[in-house]
Amino acid sequence: MESSLDTLLACSIMVIVTLGSMSGVITTVQPYLQNQSSHGWEMNYRLAEILLLDEGEPNNWGSKRDTQPIRPGLGSGSKIQFELDIDKVTRLDPENAYSLDFVEFQKSLGLQDKAIKIRFRSILKMTLELVSRIAQEDHVTYYFEVNTKKSGLPVSAGVHAYTILGDHVLNLTTSTSDSGSGLLEVELSNSLSGVVLLVGFAKMEPRMVTSCVVQFTHNSEEKAFPAGTHLALSPLNYTLEVELRNQSELVSGAMVLTYGYCFNLTKIETHQTTESYIIPRLLDNCPMVLAVIGRNDSSFFNEWTEYPPLQFEFGSGLIGKNDPMNLCSFCFLVDICSILCECEIIIGEGSGYA
Amino acid sequence: MLRNKRGQIRVIEAFLASAVILSALLVAIPLRMTTVNLADMKSLHYAGLNVLAELDRDGTLGHMIATKNWTVLSKRLSILLPVGAAYNLTVTDEDAETVNDSSISGGGALTENVLSVTYLLAERTNCKLYVISLQLSWIR
Image (cartoon, rainbow over all chains, first blue to last red; front, side, top):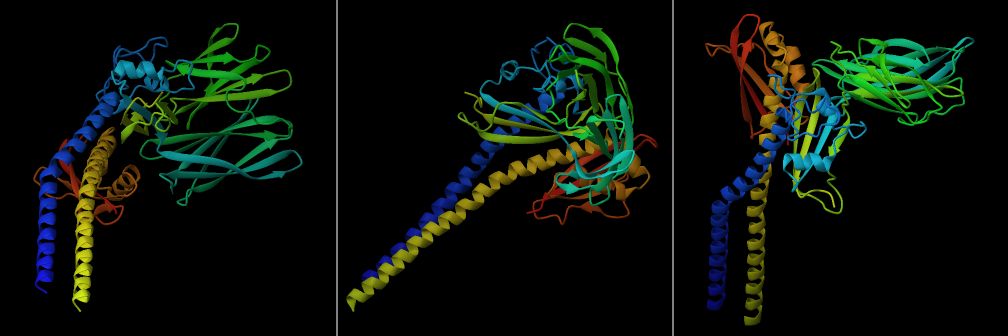
């Protein structure tokens, strides 16, 4: 009995001592651990912030197509915080012919040991979906469901859309309700045929605009083609460069579309396989959709691009063979040409590529 | 009988050993949570500051305060702040008097980990100074 009481006493003391020592160690170590983790987070945050606030060197590296920046900051140089330069952002878009090489970008930042991913996203999201088609004697009416969302939640927005079929351009206006949905009615004459480009813009305050482009066929057996099939479009420094993929095809015109405006672009240069157009500096706070209409032997085709691009990723892979560690993600609200959008910067330890 | 008592003590020992392991876990879990929360709170602080700066960019924030348009201000904050963040905004003037006569809040009720972002605003039309205090917390 005595030995049992001894064991019980010993166990109780053991428990008290263990718990006491644990809480003692935790109390001592916790501030250090917090400081260490917080220091890493803070340092990465500062890096991300500098990338967005700094103009870089040379300060106009974005608009010079062949210039590799010595220090690649994305800031526009204005006094407004987080206002990014349209061309510096455009040069991060991998779809653009003058896109920066990520390895060079990383070297210029002096961060070869870090994995960096930059994601640009519109705050407002818009989708267009063909829901029905009613054929009548002289025309066909297409009904598109418009959905507008912010962070996955439905929001009400004003909607402006354009349809382009060859030289025929149609203006459409609608809006989405508080449930985030609306209906867009597109009426096309039976005298027209081919692949139609439907460009939609949704707008809501404060300064949030997004675009959505869909293709559909009208009175034709042709199939919609993926972007970049016929032409490569690279806007930079308010000039659109059009590169023909096939010499038998011709460019018949280019136009700029925004929420409030739609007009033709002026051609400034023509070479064997390339053409250049001037992009106007519009006051409309809206990403510009640059649509190019071309012609091949049998029919019209359309290609488009966005300037500035608001939906792309640039940087190292975050999942794969050489996974980076201790990833920190920072989300900023940034301004590009007075358009409010989201820029997420993810920084981790390790280069992120093999 | 003696064998039975020994058995009881073994049970108590096992129970105590489990208690030690459990208490170790209970002490260790909050440590991890505190570390994660710090980064979350910091990012929320910067997000709040970023949103106020963006609203002030073209003088919209000052205009909404000058015209006492609290509904629109609340709506814009709800749109721009991250999903899952609850907020409460108070506007005070140069004499430290509260300007907003109705509550400007959204996203749910503020929890125990509330942080405050203070923003000094110069209203451009009437040249007035306002102190904006934005309280934020993550909804768990």
